[in-house]
Length: 399
Image 1 (tube, rainbow, N blue to C red):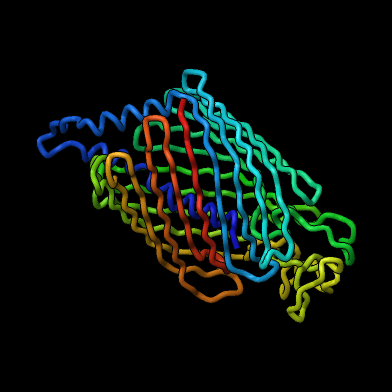
Image 2 (cartoon, rainbow, N blue to C red):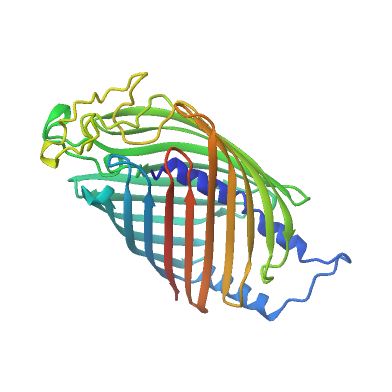
């Protein structure tokens, strides 16, 4: 099952690597303290970075997601669209994103879709702070719409330390029920939309890099998930980690970074909402429910200590994971850069005994010219009860 929380975990694993560019900058000095000569490749890289940061661009977007699970839980999707980034000058960027998503259940038993448009702005509030604001809406084939939003503020008093606070509202794409919602013809939700869950959260955290190759981060958040005919479900989350750069060299090196890190993550929900009662695609006996009889599963939608309530998303009372991660980064030629990582550890959550937690990711950026690049990313993990994998593809044109 794909999970917004899993996605947050993935982002968390990646985010502790951000301070490493500072480590690499320090590593560019030799033991005598004299800076190394700037190579022609470094001049090209700096010129490209400056160009990208000061020029507008358009991106083609393509995502593909797959996961394990039964007819209720398994949700695959294809997403495609475009993004326009406008830089009118100064330190501001305005952007507009449009995407269309095709959602598929196991064996395409029931498919739905959604179209989203989101507009936003990113910029510097001062020499030490940045902000981002966005708002958008999604229209689903189940004849419903949702509003997504994001607000973020980051304050970095020094080059080594930053603090941030972020508020988000986003769609929960863990099952067809939670993502698009369903309209049963019979049962307790007959003739109405049920599901279409939204995640509302407030998060705050900090990152710090020490004078040594050591860096740390910590984050805390809380919020609630709610949907149509799905009661509000409060959750809290805390996570943190520490990383150590074993190798930190110039970005132009074939191997510019080797970094080891440890992360711990905890979250918990008030109710278990990994249920589908009243809108289940499977009966109690395991047989599929005919679509014209959707709602006749006879399963209660109310959460109890012995049965999850309707919601269609992973929401244990308690979840705890401990993972160790190894990351490498470098260049495989003048126009190809890469970043790869893998993590392993263990996880424990309500209703399950200790089990392994593993995952891997790989990213490549192929720069075809000064203003054309192709970033590609692949992610796979088994955080939670199911295994999921996602591919992100982009075609970026700078002008």
